Length: 96
Image (cartoon, rainbow, N blue to C red; front, side, top):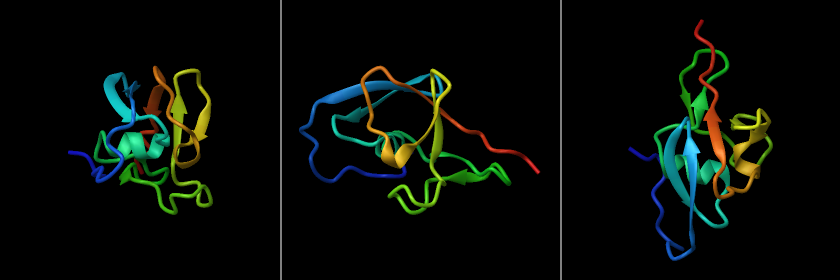
């Protein structure tokens, strides 16, 4: 179940991407954070306990929204625009 629900601006073009190897979609102009959280229940696993995380500040200050792209780059999901065909990998976090 998606954590975020889209209430407005649903008429923008749809962009397809993959999330952990599974098909997902967002809208043109979405950040990765918005696209992931309208597609799933969490953004990544905590670095300390692997518990599900959804970002914290949502504006690029807290560094709680890191995800990895298919080319290996680690980016902040809240400050990175979704692009068609992107491969997004959620960091699973570390188990204690």
